Image (cartoon, rainbow, N blue to C red; front, side):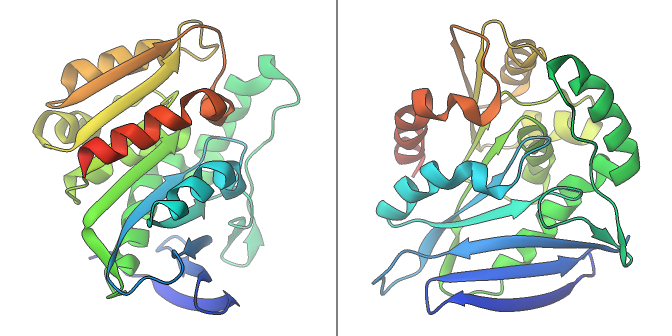
Length: 245
């Protein structure tokens, strides 16, 4: 089991908690756990992983809807993003592109600098933390990710039997761990992208769904990418979650 240090910081009494963990390579990661109010039983848990250049707040509108449905959420800042920028006491953050044309170069540089290949293990460490909370029902685990976060959640299925995995504009992953997860996991998967995605997420979605045992894809018109699609697809996401319960 991956070793990590845990610390909990209370933000709002009873309902919201800021958490942090330190990875083996020294990154101090931060996440925010929000539980629905007035619940007397264990609750389903949704882990949300954001896209490159963003942070956990990009899920705010969707999380509000999830809380209304009685689901707990853990939204995290991926390594090098948001508040998760300290590694061994030194700041190490991703390079933020100034415009769309710089995204690929900034991503490539940041991937090496920060270590994007380690994000799936970071996410597994977060779930190991959730297992220690008896108020959460890990048998009712859901995974939602955008772009980088979506691609990084796929290998997590090798370690956790989630009820559903939903990705918005999932990035490309050629790792054997991703292929194994899709070809062996019974998790229901939902890959959403636009027809003219500027980073090729539409191609990724179609490739992923071919490999998945229980996969569905939704290709939208337009060229939006990542959480910018939420206003259009929130209802689809909530319906897919309901059908997966």
